[in-house]
Image (cartoon, rainbow, N blue to C red; front, side, top):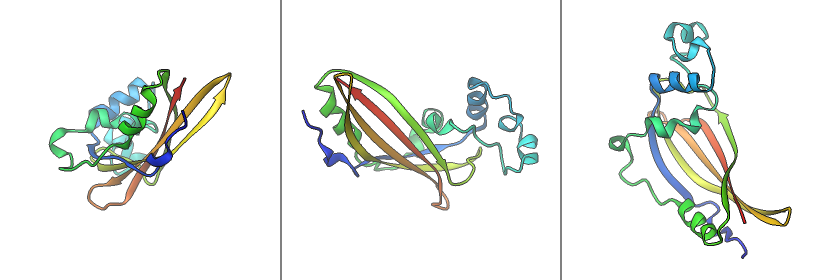
Length: 162
């Protein structure tokens, strides 16, 4: 079954997160990073940060620790990923997390309130060992809630293999 590329460019929703100290410190511990900058405001300041920074891959987890119902947009918009996944689920197969990429525009620090606006940026297929793999690439730009300036862009690649 050919893929429907009409989902490219469609939004995957908008959400708001708060970057808090305890989850940042816990995440640093979970990824075995002992750097004091992720736990101690004095160490963060000595390293040149305005507050405790986040570890490099933290944006992958921040929605699970900082997305509170009461601060979400009244209209988060539609999520085209649901449409894209429904096209694939009917075919069976496996869903896998592929690549994850983070592009930092400035350091993320404890106290930031970020608004993420996502979209499907690409969908394509590849053949491998007689199996068809469909790749869905999403991109979320996380911006500072007060200034609107971008802070980090997250690219995520989901793979469906039949």
